[in-house]
Length: 331
Image (cartoon, rainbow, N blue to C red; front, side, top):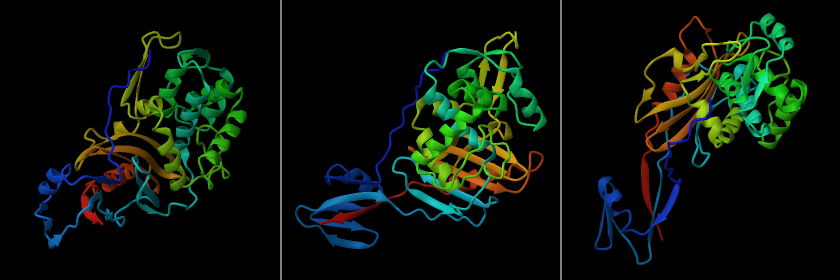
């Protein structure tokens, strides 16, 4: 199945914008501020405006309450300017679990020229994945699958066979691919991250931080193919030799609830992660107003049978955003 054309285009506001007063008069009036006769009239009284004065619009400081988080560490970032809106324990070492697959999917996209190429899934990758009780997309040993379908399988159902097969195809072996993962981490400034595998299965030497993972996700969603996959709720694989009727894959995050609207926006996409050692983890993207944000949380207590505390944390964070503007004079 060919990739869907990216149709949605979102405008982005810069954090600070110097504009002629006439251009923002409507905005000021709507905010209860009136400019006239050389004066700026607002809730704080009347102030004179001198000749040549420019007005600067910038985001009001967001006050995000983190006391209600279930997760041990968390961070939320505005994508248009990289501003960290709020964070807690951003540099604390955590186990990323399947959030690892964000890097795996991204590097496969960047290092495989033909995403429509079809490959045979090696039988030898399956026994270890079965033994580790790894999450799987449902493909079979020896099945012929397109790379693009493996990429959806990496993110949506968190398929270990998809990650391992894509890694081997991209670099010749998973070991070589992991070297590429660590090189990319250093390139992105992920100073407190080290990968040992492409799946996120637990290893004492496989670690990251929510701050580092936020850097990764900020970079990854700039890639249109990655963002389309990351924000997809489901993906249908056309019939293969292993699945003659096709295979439907669904995003493990979106399966946890039906309504993903938050105050002034919606949560658009995400990748879940869980191991006993990592706890519940989530990397997500939301659109609030006309601004995109990402959030990464890790270390929430619970498991697949409890309340989805990582998802509750995403709603808790995004629900506090309001994109308010403030205006000041710059003389």
